[in-house]
Image (tube, rainbow over all chains, first blue to last red; front, side):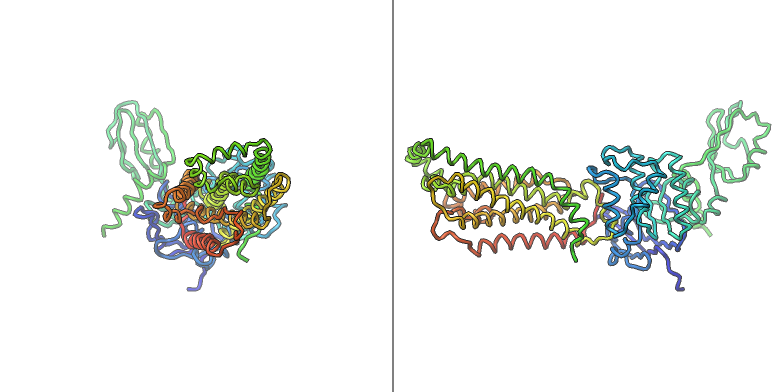
Length: 303
Length: 274
């Protein structure tokens, strides 16, 4: 097979001394896709990204970006990528304009018009010193910094933290635009809903290992909901019977459970049962992992 | 091309105020010290010092500081033995602090995550930052030369000296600062997450200086003196045969080159944790 992946790793492993960073990571990210990379904090997302960027060196295994080795050809690789770190730390005495020019000069490109265009979109004042900027505004500088030199690959590490919903929407619009122009996007996050909005495929990382690579469609079908039903009377955990209820737990009048079935089924089952209140929410990733991926893995082991 | 000009000029700009503050202070101090020499000679303080030197204890003590009455009453001798004490301490501190921060600060302030994501190799990063350090070290040495020669010309009074001896002394001083800079650069790499090496720097400089003093004061300690770079500084500017000695130059350059080479080797493969 001669298909070239934009990012490809084979058995990529990183230990910090004895501490686990990532173990045996195999990634294959195709050109032009928006690839989600999700996992709880401490799962190894940033370690993966920093290894890809050459900030840290793999203990074993290998990786390539645009077919170039992440250890040996890191300079050539970086000409083609834009990176947005999860925490923004810049030279505090510079103002936005200075930082962006400094950044652009590394690529030997004139990015002035793009800087201006993006600053307008995000309503960003480029003449204030970084040290005086709020977290959200620093994040906007970071967005500009990773986009202005028109990279072929964007590596985004939890890009939306600290951005208000309006800015998030604008940011996602720009990402889609970039993607339409054939820019590949590697999108790391711990929020499933955000990844679902953007990506076609996601990879799920837990405790340093990739435990699943899924199409978003499949994930959506497996979509878990966290449900709390309040009845008019005390209940037992088997109060309702419906396909898709996982680990029900009764607490006085309340019934808590995870639900992976169809909503219609659930509502039909609840009808006429003296329901006083019903709360349906998206579970946190931790909960999904606990109730779904860890269970599935266990089940899969059995023939 | 191993130097990234964008990075180099940014580093120059970043440390411009630090450099200006230190270099101007040091230059002013040099001129002030020489002005003080002038007062010292004119106010008959020198004669009072003569009585001071009659006391054998005091005489010995001053020998530790590498001086005696003949040296003290000469403008260049006065500069090289008396003023040079703090000027040398200040200069080496400037050098060790600048070199100790220039690379490690990116890690400490977490800007390494920005810099290392740019198309620039690790070697280019070290070269460019070293170039900025060398530029400022060179400029500081020029300022020391200029302020020293001006101060000497204005305040020399009747003393005679060779300007060449002053140039050689300043060159040794440059090499001493370079050596401490190389130490700072290398040590900053070994400290976790690039924390500032201020306390280590002060320890190294004062430690080195005290070892040098002790080695001059007592015979048994004289051999230990050679672990201190200060020992290799030659302040005997009034000796007729005072000249540039190659073994001293080789010592300073050797240590600097080895430490800088080690810096390249370590930084090339270092995990940058931010």
